[in-house]
Length: 110
Image (cartoon, rainbow, N blue to C red; front, side, top):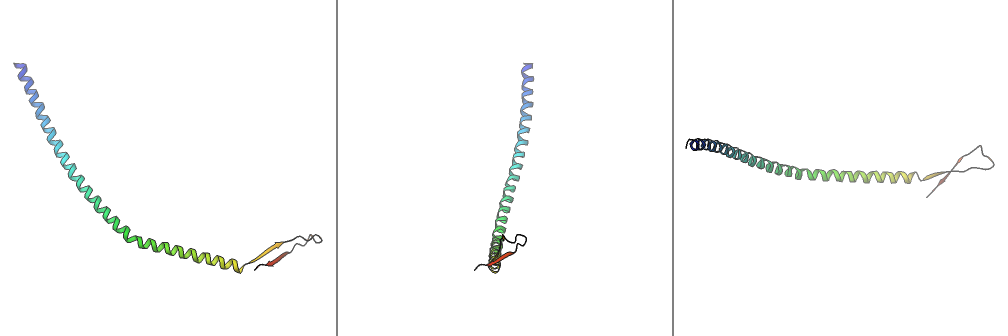
């Protein structure tokens, strides 16, 4: 009987500790759940904010792209104009009689 009473007391003490541990765990879970909900709400708010800012920046990016295309067209046009103005080519020939004097011959191409 004495051993049974001692075992039951130890069992009661263990159950009491288990009850306290479960209570602490429940409080921790509730706290973590609340913090997770707040974090998710903040993440949603940030997502909406970033989306709005990206939509606001899109026209600026398109404008920069258009300016880049325009600069490319102007540069290409300037290159074509420069090549058309400088449409001369130099051809080097070697005279068999006069090897010491090599003069370039200029030929205009049209």
